[in-house]
Image 1 (cartoon, rainbow, N blue to C red):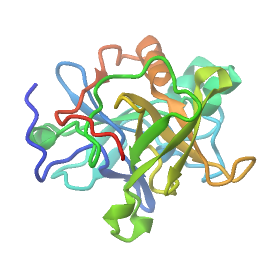
Image 2 (cartoon, rainbow, N blue to C red; image 1 turned 180 degrees about the vertical axis):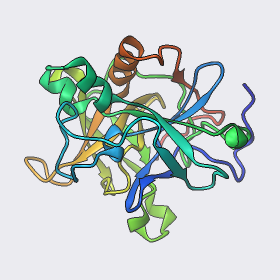
Image 3 (cartoon, rainbow, N blue to C red; image 1 turned 30 degrees about the horizontal axis):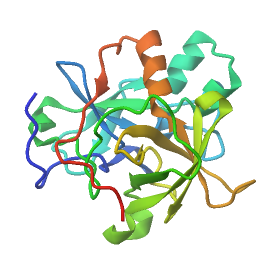
Length: 245
């Protein structure tokens, strides 16, 4: 697959809207040998409001919903949603229900040539993290919320992870600045530039201003095991990872 140079192209950090008033940030680029997908959080297509975070009980727009993508000539299509998949399976594990928060948006073929998988500001991802994060480990992310009013210097975020919790499904992170509404779905890189998570929640207690980041390796493993997207995998960035100073 040929990826265009990182100039005037769509990358992780796209802003995607699935309905009027709903906005999220794309995380990483995925590919199955035929189709190109951008990742977002499953809750970005939720219909029960911001407080509905349990994917096994919360409602969502259906697969097939058009998704407007900033910079794209045509809408993408919501093709996978972990919430809908878990509900169809009758998933009962509490941690999986709470933190399995991944969706795929298929890119229209007309826009594929303008896709680059590199993360703005940081480069990478260099690979998928399958081992989790450690307490105090430096992490990086790029959020594109419209609530920043176009102040792009606030989009790159760095911080630390407090490590894994909830059976490895969650990473609690602190960043400067913290993720805000509209950053949901954005991707997180570990200290080596590996993709490890997807921004899922903004915490107000017990750790104010922290973010809950769902574990990407578990989210992808669940998708591979329980959907028709078993061949979809993370695409490494074309730009080298540059850790934050």
